[in-house]
Length: 238
Image 1 (cartoon, helix red, strand yellow):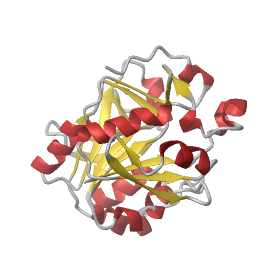
Image 2: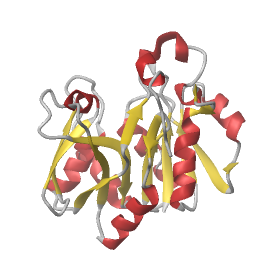
Image 3: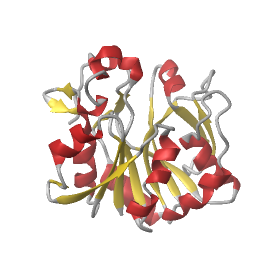
Image 4: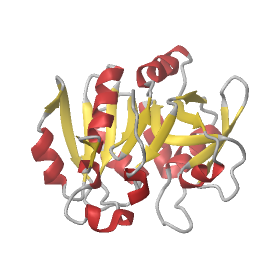
């Protein structure tokens, strides 16, 4: 199991805050945002970290070098920021046939359970496990995705940025994949507005082909850093 951390985008919605710095290198609680994902990867017990970088890539590479807390870091350059699925595709050679856990370099989770998610993935022989949480405010789901699942946590449908969320389940970028997910990138449609391939559509392509996809409650709270309001939230990760 490897960790694939995506940190290629600028974060244009942060305006001048990310003009001269990769948004993953912004500081929250005295730490670079990406360090939270690096720690989650190491604490989950992965054997190696693959880090996809793009905008101001040298800032991240020069700061972290080739290892973090004893785990080797391999870098992949995403020359053009064409979305999350494109970033996953860019990393295929570096992932080198291994199953992998996906994390985002601009997220913070409260009481994360990544090691348990990997164990759940293995125990249930799943093809994909989607990390989710329950939220009181469904407006938050409109920024990520939701899913439809049964009582056994088998997922049947994912919906990217739903206009009207179907339930209280908020999807995160934290998922565990069989390496064979790469076989489904070519079947993933381009989003009609953003002209990029979206993570929920990639996973849905696997579901439609009969693969086993499950959900797992990954944390108590989740923030993807996309605005000044996100930075100003009261974060407690422990």
